[in-house]
Amino acid sequence: MVAFFRHVEPEAGRIIIDGIDIHSQVGLDDLRSRLAIIPQDPTLFTGTIRSNLDPFNKYDDNALWRVLEVTGLKSQIEQREGGLYSVVTESKFFSYISYTLYSRIVTN
Image (cartoon, rainbow, N blue to C red; front, side):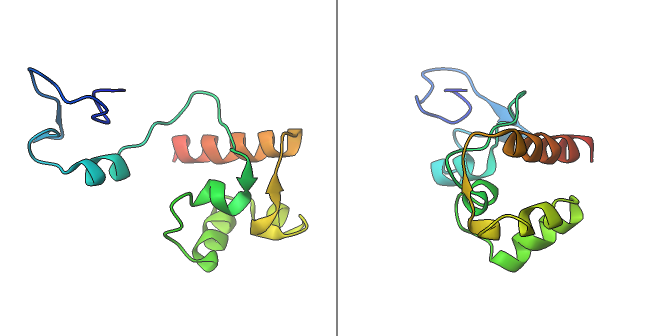
C-alpha cells in the first residue's frame, strides 16, 4: 500500500496500473484521489452519514440521496434524526448500513 499511494518514492522499479506508470505519469494528488482501498470488513468512520459517503465533499446532498435511493437505503437514512447529517456512532444499524453498501457496490 505504501508503494501504491507513493508514501515513499521508489528507488528502483515501476508500478504500472492499466498501462500507466504511476510514478512518472501521474501526479501525487491525482493518484491518491483516484485509488481506493475496499476493506474486507465494511467500516463507517466517526462523523456523519454524509461525511462517510462523501469524505471530500465533492457532491451535493441531492446526489447522495440519489445514491441512497439506488442502493435501497434512502428510507432508512430518512428515518434517522438529521438524515444525511445524523451522527455515526457504533451500532448494529450502522454495521448493517455499511455492510449493505459494501455488498451492493462489490456485487454490481
